[in-house]
Length: 301
Image 1 (cartoon, one colour):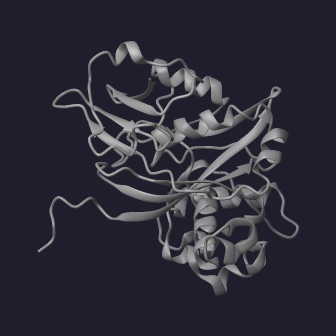
Image 2 (spheres, one colour):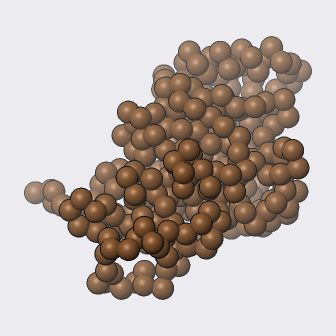
């Protein structure tokens, strides 16, 4: 008999941290999830979503992406088997186009009209299974997996209604593109500096999902795109980031405890809603805990 108390199974997912250099600073592209979404409704996230079965079709993608199998494993595997590295990477490129309208791909003799036509197909067809593969096959796009680099590996905490095993990639915005939400899964898109996004999270202007908040904090270490490009070279997936979620009691919400918190490994990790307002940290300050304050995740000491 199934255990009704067992956490939901992990689903594989991919996320792409899309960045650009603008007005002398590094910016990231964030999308606001629909308020009707079943996961993180109304919060700002990076483009991403579930890995589809078609994302791992090795025979097909051999001719429709720009890395040889050995190069996929070397550049994007970093401990992953080739089939897994391929499927996560293709999913990241696909989801970025579906949600953000940014296509990491090229084709022989491509022009603005080709990209415009692909964008029209994205809005018309992206709800259909296998549409991205069909786009590559019929339009001749070769997807630029070479533009991606590994960033981090996240596992959703036990206690969340849906749970994911997610690989976060990072890539620079292709020249001549900007980003546009699909107005279905995502309702708003904006280019923003990490510092501004973190500050906006505290005021409620840009409420962030916990992994997005942590990642933007990491990006504070890279003031420019050139600095980030140097920092991502040779980066490996590292240990999975598997936060813990602790209930603070009825009506008091919950906190997320990150793996680098000194009390992370304690079985009797305490949860106390008292004085959390006084424990709020300013944007950009180091943190290891996030408090859900009325639907907004805020760093606390």
